[in-house]
Length: 521
Image (cartoon, rainbow, N blue to C red; front, top):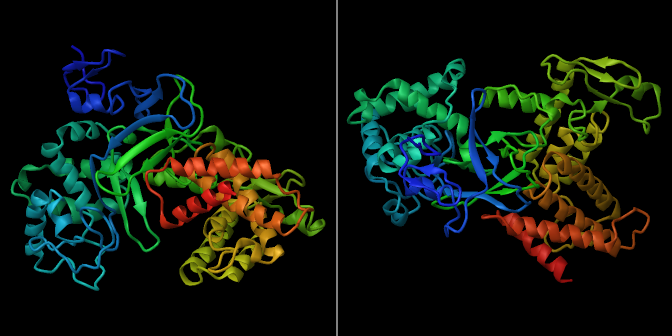
């Protein structure tokens, strides 16, 4: 008996092109382009170690669509400032559902939300607690924990084709029981649903914990704003992608219902190669990256990048050797790298003098700088001098490609040498040179850890082109600036990457417009 490629149920349909089997038209649509002209270029495989994953069924070119799908369910992050339960835009809580008390933008969003079933359960919970869930001018971050698990539970009746496939994903419940959120979700999700649902007593706790686990391990964060708003979603195909510390795909999310995920190849992918995504920011150093993967996805990554002290040549974990720095001229830096990157207790060793630095001390120093950066972001977001002082201090401890510099650049580049009413060339040459160096270092890292058609590279390429053109216009010829042809090519690549996106933030739209102007001139 043939089984469905996606959910394992008895098949009803067979693809005439590749002979894969499907339980129905819904899962067949996950397998082919919307016009039905061709199969998507992937096949599902399975292993005991990672569960199901996907591989390329043919050679895939950069920019080629690997699959496109609508979300199974989407909903607010566990804790977020108030957002609409339909479109997930930030709201002021002036418009609330009269039954359950949750906020919407307006009656249009409430009407289009398919909110009836979840509203019945939330209303019972609301009445039992005898309190208003949301009120204008009062930020309630606690009442969103239940929404996405409840929606996945209800999808068993409303979207069985999606639920049946998602239900085969790993939940890591055995490992998750050791973490604090297990007890928190027991109260805010499991108990709440069981007490409020008409058939709550018939829903096993294990099932609800499994739903929470599936979401915790497999959902994607679709949007997160600096103000604290955010929402997640889980997908049939997208949730099958394993993590890679150098991913070969990029996801392009739409920010409005039905929340489409378009996955494209960011680099060339050979037939038979696993198709991978990234679970953590690619410019995170090995120790922090492996820690995030262990605590969030319950595995210890041992890939080539993680095992390499240089992180594939990116130097994201490389620091200054303090011994050599004291003995030599400051301009002649010697670098220390993790002695054993796969050990949680590794020291950093200098390959010039052989001296070691305690790993815990290194981690504490890095965290101290990241905490200082966080303070600047929240309290001095646009103060150039605060960033510049932090950069000056960091140069004594970290390689220019280190995670600390990447994090600083992420927040500093968009505001550095940028002011209303001024063009880039109006800023002092010395500041432009500093910005050029930051861009160059950031690009060196991104070209290694998130190569190809990634938005990370596109935005930094724009900043680099923008400041390089300004320096050329100012007549600065002694800086080894790229020639106009190279800058034109970089601008075209940045424009091309951003043009592929389903959604651009307001700042990214400004970048896109500026690139249009650069290419027009």
